[in-house]
Amino acid sequence: MFQSPGAIALTFGPLTIHWYGVIIGVGILLCYGYIMLELKRRHMDSKPVDDMAFWLILSGVLGARLYYVIFNFSYFWAHPAEILQIWKGGLAIHGALIGGVLAYSIFVWRKKIRWLLFADIMMPGILLAQALGRWGNFFNSEAFGRPTNLPWKLFIPEENRPEQYLDFSYFHPTFLYESLWNLLGFLFLVFLTRKLHPRPSILNPQPSGIIFFAYLLWYSFGRFFIEGIRTDSLYLGPLRAAQVMSFALFFGGLFGLIFLRKRTTIKSPK
Image (tube, rainbow, N blue to C red; front, side, top):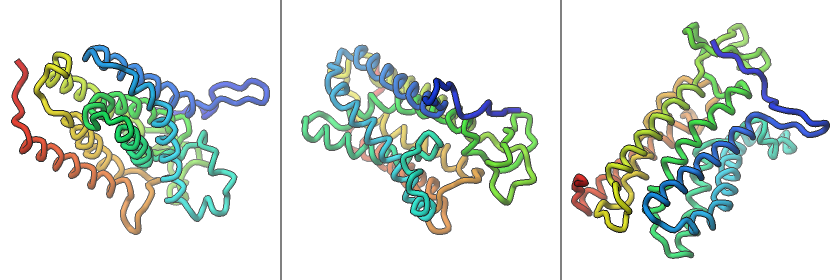
């Protein structure tokens, strides 16, 4: 059984540090650390990533929050002061991806660097950050699934339960399901990276884009099914928005790999 110790990590006088912010920050550092190690392994210059890092983080956070606010527009219209209170939760990963991709695309266009090459290098680190970031939902007692009595059930305080489930105490820890799925995906993408690029990429004939599209397939597949048991989904009409996005991104990844397959003959590294 899981039970959150609470959302607040530390308090210093008027300053309150929330676990949600701590975990997001550590996830960003882990992502950055992985990317630096991979660039070093490939004998590549880290300056492009250093130059874009701040803007990608800012765009990702803004995109994540804006996405969440748009899908909860009626609530935030009535409570506008809460729009900036991101420590309470409410960062949508699909919004972060949209914001990050837009900023990344502008940067690589201006700097004339290869879009798919650096995307391949960054995606495993991003999935690692997502794996850790889901634990912020644990501390906030949010992003949980339907009621359950499984041994790994999650206790949710009454004030955090949906109205229709007030009489239930234990729920599916969907944050944990997604965290583990993302961690496995990170290990898979690292394995795939080392398999396709065992030497510095400048000497390797493998096409760029395989890791990026594999990320879309892996994350979207797991998120689609995990989203189906959550109780706090954002909706696009009668459909769960995350499932719609996952469906679209999964097939985007599939078509991307098919395109690469037709464009280049993929050979196993020697």
